[in-house]
Length: 235
Ligand code: ATP
Image 1 (cartoon, helix red, strand yellow):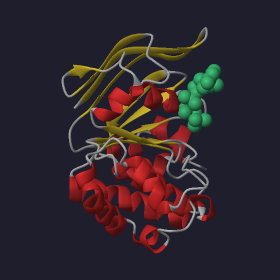
Image 2 (cartoon, helix red, strand yellow):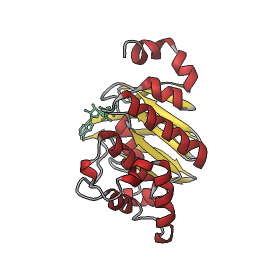
Image 3 (cartoon, protein in one colour):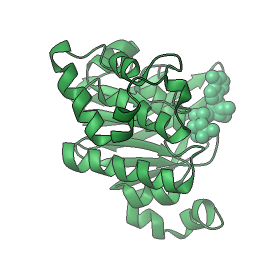
Image 4 (cartoon, protein in one colour):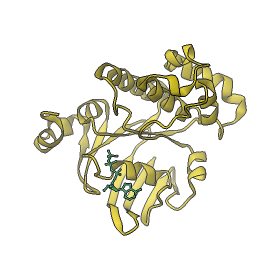
């Protein structure tokens, strides 16, 4: 579904991604783990076109999107829930969801709204409440729900567990699994919480300083000695 080849991304003269190769197949949950500053968010954002890859190819469903503007990439069927959630704090839950649906055909709005309210019943209870008054976990749910409202075929999630209590993290991860299993949604999950992410994902990649150093199934990476030492033990 998505094939990334030899992608390099720079911030000024700093090379944040140094030749990334990665593949995401339809129906998979693929995770990218790595330390703070490794370049994980940069890869997710490069898929969305901001920042633009300086070189390399990003092919989504047969089309090279590496040099397309972000709005066109979104329109092709990719949506992201960004790091730090970035919901609209002064808008109600329902208005936030309407913003997510802005590129979708309006005829689907009511049905899609019901669908995300079924996945996230808490959001239905809070439909008229302002986004900024929700708890951290609810804001994360809203960010994912908003992304779903654009009817993507590929959902990109940047650190959905960031700053959330363990019980809420478990809830969010089980919802991601549900969205993948029940709707066949393909998910690319960037996470520092390697343990949860690798348990959930079909496959994973490890990034160190802008380079992919390891890849394998979630189970393989969970039992890999290097991964255990760097990302799982004590953390
Ligand atoms: P985190 O979990 O902290 O978000 P990450 O693995 O997602 O980490 P990135 O945020 O992609 O890492 O950052 C990769 C590198 O690029 C880091 O060295 C970071 O300092 C640098 N960087 C990120 N954003 C910018 C920017 N807007 N301008 C300049 N350098 C940046």
